[in-house]
Length: 247
Image 1 (cartoon, rainbow, N blue to C red):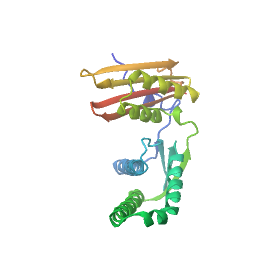
Image 2: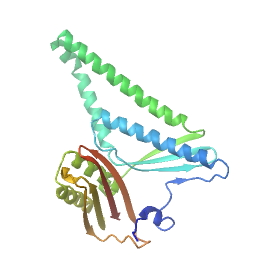
Image 3: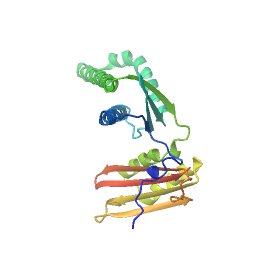
């Protein structure tokens, strides 16, 4: 008999709360679809920003939805806000030197620059459309608040994104897990457990690797356990990552 229960659902009512809080008797399916539309809009927007700033981190650790009769409150917890700020600062520096560069360019290079500028404008328009779609996906007033996570590597999703990036760059498995455990220990966690499965290091036969550091009491309901499952697409196929963190 395998112990395959989700550790977050196992602790509901003890140390874990629901990410979406609302009550509906008649239109339950419609409210459920509304939650799905909100999650999808935020995810699409984050994926688009990741491409525009060439970042591998989405940065969103969790999303909480609270529905009232007149409005919907969406709390977004984000880890790496500095990535967006640095990108804006770089764009301001580039604008100052645009005139100096154009004086030294030929006609063909100017045309290429204009094409890139048009593409950037289109990207910004697409981002605005994504935000507008999010606002149009709900029937009530939408209140969005963003909070920064103080210790990003205490969140299993951020660690999973870091491991996924290293797997795409074909770093050795043991080095990846050792570095991930070091990052978690710096964030003052009591224990961490990592499992990876698939064609690790490009080997033809699928296998699994695991590492554990500290205490991870999965059978103790009072223990605050954070859990994340993350699938990453690599050249060799899809690899699965599971992370348990004892906070």
